[in-house]
Amino acid sequence: MNDIVVEARGVVKNFGALNVLKGIDLTIARGDVTCIIGPSGSGKSTFLRCINQLETLDGGYILVEGEPIGVKVKNGRVHLQSNAEVARSRANIGMVFQSFNLFPHMTVLENICEAPLRVKKESRSIVKNRALKLLDRVGLSSKAGSYPASLSGGQQQRVAIARALAMEPRLMLFDEPTSALDPELVGEVLDVMRGLAEGGMTMIVVTHEMGFAREVGDHLIFMDDGYVVEHGNPRTVLESPQHHRTQQFLAKVL
Amino acid sequence: MSSINTPTDELTQDDAVDRSLLLERPRQLHIARWITAGIVLFLVFVVAHSLITNPRFEWDVVFGWFASERLFTGLLRTLQLTIISMVVGIVIGVALALARLSKNIVVAAVASFFIWLFRGVPVFVQLLFWGFIAAIYPRIIIGVPFGPEFFSVDANTLITPFLAAILGLGLNEGAYMSEIVRAGLISVHRGQTEAANALGMRNLTVLRRIVLPQAMKIIIPPTGNQTISMLKTTSLVSVLAFPELLYSAQLVYSANFKTIPLLIAASLWYLLMTSILSIGQYFIERHYNRGSGRPVPKWDRERVINAFRIRNRTQETSK
Image (tube, each protein chain N blue to C red):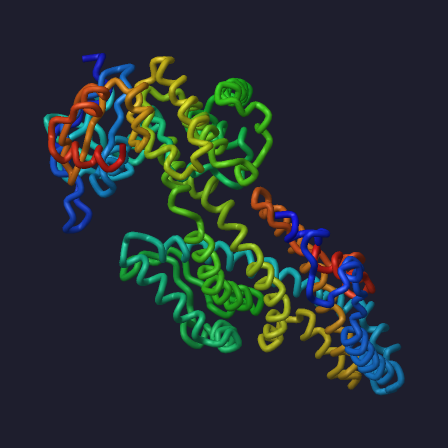
């Protein structure tokens, strides 16, 4: 049981009359890198956002580290989590966004230190030390005092990864981390993610980078129209897809 | 390919343009700029001449009263009113802005009604209402509505002219500030809140650490304007017989009939104070612009010289 980081059963999400997720079942083991591919509008980003409650579920449930997301069970009844409880469970899940979302009024170092200082209330010297190590790990030691606006897209995304790692998460979610980048900057971000995967981080990556999925991914999930259509070893799925919708999608993107 | 850029011996040019002349830069004289500046300076001279030579300005009286203790005391009261009303206005403005953005539609609707009311009635009229509050509520009672009273006071004792002024100016300002604050809050991209939430930050922390500092860039410039405007609007309080700067001047000239010199002396104080506020605003804007790479424009010597310097065209276009 301890080896399961994420367990999703029958996850349903509607935006008004639009059914975005129509019952997602998924189990993710510790240390695994799971890549989710699929056409736009297939619900893959929405599913990712459900895991750290940026979206609320309309059906089904998700457990992270054995703890239900968004709800708690007390005296045999289900209750909504308080805002504090939601925030606490999010603190253990790192998220990287397509549009980086760095805080523009803070330097790179301040961006990384903010959450450990404010949320975990750790001491300034410990946090700063860890932040500098993380910056070194993503190859941006020289940019600690820079503001995000002066960095390239690839550098900003590497800072965003360092910012998420500063909270020492047990799970990292990547929502199309390279989709907003110029082609020549994609590699530097994927390199950082590859290093993270080799270090044993549990990762869920919504991506269009089939090469990354093939080389780094342990599992590949193809989503379409709110369903998980195909799930398996990345090489197997990419080279001999079973379902005709997977075949159609891969024929277009490969 | 080289024939396009430089004429070569093989290809002859059949136009009559002398290429060597094109390498020179023609001079730009700014003739229209100099003539306009001359006309404007002449008009300034005419006005200045009349200001100095017209004896009815009585400049000696103006400066005598400008430095007087009575006007200075009035000025201090004006500054006091400005600061307190702005603080009240900003606090109410932030609260109303958050209320208007609330998911609770009752809260949002009441906030909208408040803003509609206090923006729609002239502030002068509002000040009169607060001044005459005792005619509506002769006694002000603290207690449980329809229940026991804990505390009761005569409205004329509680609502002094000063408090009436603060209420009138502050509530009116709150209605305007709420729109400024709201514009600032919604200018911050939603991704900022999501990123902060994803890091485990609570809503109040997100507001205080992430959203408000970014909204400040939008909020500060109009708030500076509001403060400058408030400094001048406090003169309306003279109608409540509260001796701020204007009413202090009025008290003097009603006794000595030096109406114009005293109004000028008061105006000079207003001008001096608004100038100081403008300088303060420049530095606050610069602080909240950090990280945006967009400097606040400067009025320096270089800009003045550049506007009139005779120079060649390459420099002009490269600027």
